[in-house]
Amino acid sequence: MDIEEVLELADHLIFTKTGKHLDHLQQAILRGTIQNCTYSEIAEDHYASESHVKWVGSELWKMISEELGETVKKSNFRAIFEKGKIYKNKISSAIVGETVTVHHINICSESERAKAQQQKQSHLNDPEITPNQPYIDLNDAPKITKFYDRTQELSTLEKWIIEDGVQLITLLGLSGIGKTTLSLHLIDEIKTNFDYIIYRSLGFAPTLDETLTNLLEIFGNPDKIEIPLKLETKLSQLFNYLRQYRCLLILDDIQMLFFEGQLAGHYQSGYENYQLFYKKIAEVCHQSCVILNSWEKPREIEKIEFENLPVRTLILGSLGLAAQNIFRDKNLSNPETWDILINTYQGNPLWLGMIATLIQELFNSRVTEFLYYDEPILCDSLQEQLKLHFQRLSPQEKTVITVLSHSSEIMNLQSLATQTKLSNSELLNTIQSLIRRFLVVREEQDNVTFFIVNPLLKEYVKKI
Ligand SMILES: Nc1ncnc2c1ncn2[C@@H]1O[C@H](COP(=O)(O)OP(=O)(O)OP(=O)(O)O)[C@@H](O)[C@H]1O
Ligand SMILES: [Mg+2]
Image (cartoon, rainbow, N blue to C red; front, side, top):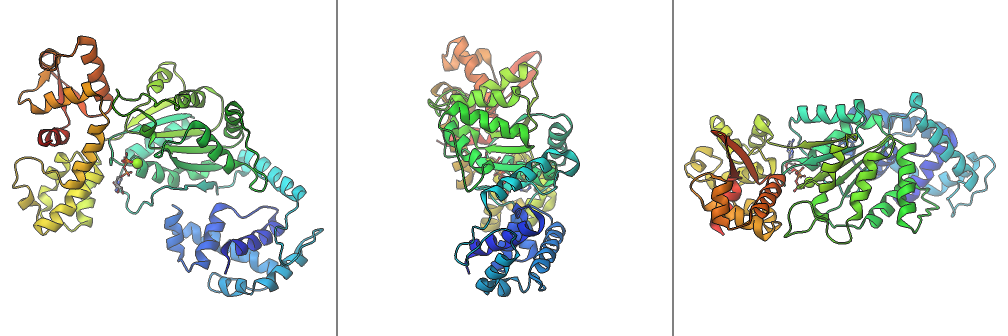
């Protein structure tokens, strides 16, 4: 059974009945049904609630049944559509003013498509009738299986986006702290406010030109995609869409656009024009929001924030007590000691998960036995994570981190200057960059500022 062909047939039925094409969720339900997935599995894949998916499903079956004059349900959809040819003929007879052949089922004429597109646009532009089913394209987004707490962060983001009309948000934090998970979960909470929701990882460092092309393909007419050649035209076309539709655009793994081995937030050559893109997102008037997830804050964002534009930054920290659920899921013992683990591993869900696995495998889930060791234990996978951060540092940053890690005393600027032999300005820039990477924090004691290195990175550096 050719899924795409069945989807096209079903799309045609729905279009004939409603003048609208299948939306993203309806397509997912049909796909899932053909692949024998349950509503709950479809809901999970689609970040929607099961009850909502069931409701959309039942409306869909009703419309298809009415068009075909035969009861169609989730349980018999496959069987009915397997008799494809019969239904292609039935469908063709249902089309007014169109000639359809059995083997050519691209039935919608250009004029009809244009009409549908117009209908869709006027529909979406009218706030009264904005459909609560946005077009969601999560492409390469990871699947969220568990999600704990982050209530405060979610309500902050929701307020910024929905109430305050913030156009550009930077979500920052160390690897594994939960930026991707949070931003994907946010979709579920606010999706009814949007026409388009798009997630893209920039992990493989696409150029701005490639990213824009990729985004424009989503908005364009799939049968007639005309992507302009010039970058400026692409940019202005994208901004037309951001004005015309309410879009939530999540761009993940932004740090991959930056240089390794230099201070934080410097774009690699060929990627500098992303600065202009982000700046325009903040400056230009539109009704959309872009979220950037990153380990490092892009430098231009600070300047934009300074200009009082609709821009905000959220730094994601510890998952807090909710991280206990991670241990519960792993069936760890000694719950009275779990807080120690959460503190030691900084409430980082990824790191806590790795340590929980180690405790399961080596200590038969007994946390007290694991805590017998004085220093924080870095399992191999956690070392790999810390290495990723360490490798990105500039030579001066590595020097400062190494000095801080090997010192038994906490250090201030003076002691760091003596030991690192960096010039004052070099040292200040280096420390500022390390703070921007969340690898060093400031601590005030008796009116003196001290700099503290992340304790787990310290353990890592001591061992290399
Ligand atoms: N709120 C949460 N509840 C449960 N698990 C979570 C939560 N947040 C994150 N996790 C888990 O922690 C792991 C890391 O999360 P995630 O990938 O979102 O981190 P990240 O900050 O995007 O990391 P990176 O910067 O490396 O991409 C994932 O396995 C995810 O399932
Ligand atoms: Mg991520």
